[in-house]
Image (cartoon, rainbow, N blue to C red; front, side, top):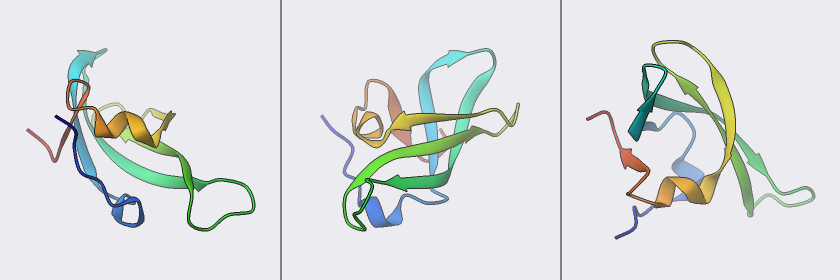
Length: 74
């Protein structure tokens, strides 16, 4: 099953990682990166770990995979 995502509502959305690495489980989307020259095609998002404040960019489609990500903080 896939998570349903509206790309325009991703900014500041909360996510829980299914696999916890380095005590990082809860994340928030801090930035959305649109494809160059486009305002309607999302490319990647920057997520920030709540506990460690580390940021990383991931393809936004990864958030659709419920084996990796769950919406909200669980």
